[in-house]
Structure formats: structure tokens, C-alpha cells
Length: 470
Image (cartoon, rainbow, N blue to C red; front, top):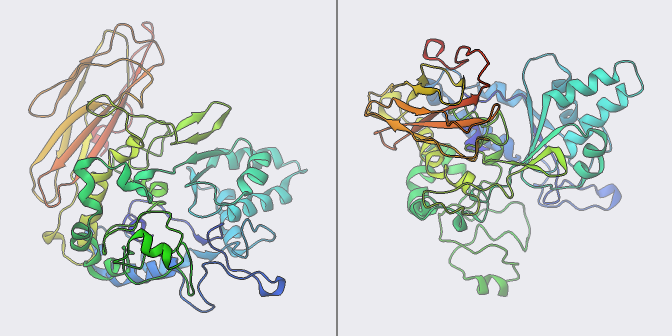
């Protein structure tokens, strides 16, 4: 939540909704259901706590970008959804009503329904729409409007409502599974060796924990905090100085290895919103394209279900390490986070900001086999830092199975020729990385997609993204 709020200047947030999951729910004394990892009545809940921390630093953040929403606006988006029990979708709630309202409005563009817990409140909103319109003359139109508009993203299925309600009744709704290991508790097992220090107490303390109110609110190993009051045999994150065996002797189920005090824990759901960040990778545009939120592949049995599980990217050695489609971006995203944390406590002239980039020819090009492609990037840096530009082919994101030979000059202009064996309709993805020499070094990207045309097709303009439009 804290990291997402630092990107709220680039993501159009329209709702922040509490929901239940198999890992946390309110309970109901009337039916003898005890709460599970839910704060005591009257306690401040985690979305509100995160917005409170944001409110303290908002006057500083807005100096860096006027698009940061006010704390009052963010608070106006907070709703309580279906929280009583795992999979609760028994009745409409303020949270489900808000989701329903957003899905039925006439605002253009997609809506990303991000289930950071269970999708049950989303399921309730969809059921409310179905209950109102199924059997009416408007139903077919409403159904198509919702499935065209909504994309459900989730880090695992934390209740059964997707399987039992959403999929059977809304089969055409796109679902992207973003359970990336690099942002989960297994991050240390998939991070590149050069990136291991981002998990360390030293990096975390210097760049996050010691940086203002938002850093103070950020959970780290051994911080003495608990998810909720009382003994929880799975919640030992707040403890430090104990071995796994010692924790077991204390009654804990040690399901992930304890780490050094002050080190990084996990941000599993960061991959949900990371795909929406406007960093030039256009991660949201197509699940197979990849970016900070990972890359997904389609289910062999369902064209509307996508998962990062099984998606493979080759590293510089040609190997395909586990979760590399997400782990390859870890250092860039961590550095960007560290810079934004500095924005919360320092002025514009004291901090670093990512370069801004464009490609003169546009971002979506059409070329015939054998035709040359020239890409002329431009990069500016508001801090006056030097910017280095590099290009590479993202083979796994494209559908042309071969490799193109890029020739890039010192100014960053790159050239290649569409291979003669490329077939009409195939795509070639080129990623431009523009990295400044500030502290920390920050990277902005541009993705150029070249679609192979038939020899008889006329060549049109380059499409959106040309520098004149930026």
C-alpha cells in the first residue's frame, strides 16, 4: 500500500476497498465466528494507516508532481467491502457498490480490479450487476460492457469465489495471475545475485525504514509488530534473533526462513499495481508483454486466463531462471522506490527523478520483411543528469521467434532490418532503457512494437508515442 501510494500520481485510483480472504476476516460473534487476523473494533485499519502516513508527506510529494492526489481524495475512495468471512459475498456492501458503480459508468478505458486478498467483494459487485440486469433487454449489452472494461488481477486465489461464481457467470472476463516470486516471501530465491543487497537491513534501513513517516510505517523483519493481537503461529515477522528451530520451540510454524532484523519481508501485491506504472513499458496493455508487474502466458484451455507461472525469459547467459520475467526489473523498481521515498522528505533540487523519453518514429510501427527500421530516441532529465541509452530485443514478448541484430550508435539511435523470414502479423519488441547517473540511478523505458506487414500492405505512420506528442 505504501509503495502504491508513492505511484498514485501515475495511477488513476478509483477505489480502495477492504475485503476478506482466507488469511484475514472480521468474523461474526452472532454466528460464533471469531475474527482472524483482524484488528480489534475501533482500530485503524491498514489502508487508512497508509493514507495517514501519505498525508504527512503529501506537502512534500506534491512539490515533485502536482498530480499526486490529495489525502482527502484518497480517503474519499476508501470503502468497506465484504469482510465477515472467507468468500463472503452474501450482501451488497459499500465496497461492492463502489465497484459496481465504476464498472457501469461511462468513463473510457479499462478498470483493473486488483484482488490483493480474496476476490469476494469483486464477486459481490458482479453478482449485484447480474441480479439487476440478467433477464432484461439490457443484459447482453451490460455483460459485454463489463467484460470489455474489467481486468481482474490477483496474487493467488485467496478464496473460492473466482472459481465458484466469477468464472462460471462471467467467463469472458480477463484474469491475470501475478503471483511473482520476486515480490513475495520467496524473493531471495529468485533475485539476481547482484540484486541480493536490496533485501538487506542496510539497504532497507538507509532507503526506506529511516526515511520519514512512510518509512516508519513500512514493515520489516524484527520490527516488533504483529498483524493482529494474540498469538498467531504463522506471524513471527516482528521477532528477531531467533533461529527457525527456536521459533518452532516457541510454537510457530516456520513456513519461510527468518531473516536479519530490519531486512525486507515481502510486497507480494506490488506486482498487481506495478503493471500499471507509466514507465514506458506499457505493461498493462497486453499480459504477454511483460514489465515491472511480470509477464503472463495464456492458459492452454482458457483464452481469458493468464498466469505468470510458467512464463520464461532468457537472461544474458541464455538460461531461463525462475520468475526472471519479473526479477529482471527488481533493481530498477527498488531504485525508483528509494528515490520516491526521498521525495517524501526532501525538495525537488535535493532528489533524483527518472529521465523522460520518447522515440521520434513512434511506438507502434509496421514494416515489411527486409525493410530497415531506424529508431531515434530522445531523453531529457529534469535534474540535469547525464543519460545513457541502451536498446535490446525482448524476444519473449514478441511473436517473431528469431533474433534481430541491433546496431546502436553512441547517441542511442538504433537500427535493424526486419528479417526476411518474418511472417505477416508477427511482432518484434524493442526495449529502450534510458538511465541517468543520479543517486540512485533511475531508468525510464520505451517499448517499440514492430508488426510485420504483408509485402502489399501500405506503410502508415508510426502511431502514438512520437516525440512531437510527448
